[in-house]
Length: 142
Image (cartoon, rainbow, N blue to C red; front, top):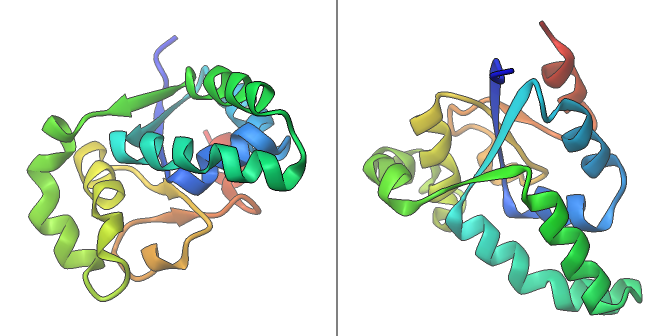
């Protein structure tokens, strides 16, 4: 079955998928009807924070890495060569907030889809934004 919807995940959501149950369950439940994607830099950023988060949550690092890898195998990596073509437009949209988030905005522009985030820097960028509390509305809508 080809997913009818696409949703870009930011690095924070990817980390939540690795350490929490709610995000992971939504990705698992809707994985056949929704294409979950994230720019390459979000994979890198999330991976960078696995160790400190695992330490803070008192989770063995090997377990955290295993779960993260298991969850992220369901998230399509969008490389710079693809989302980079929207860099200028993305930077213009996010410049007054956090310019480092431009790859997420560029990926949303490339795929013409919303972002799943808890980061308020995306609000006002012209990109539809879903938080974990209400993303189920988007995921389950026909």
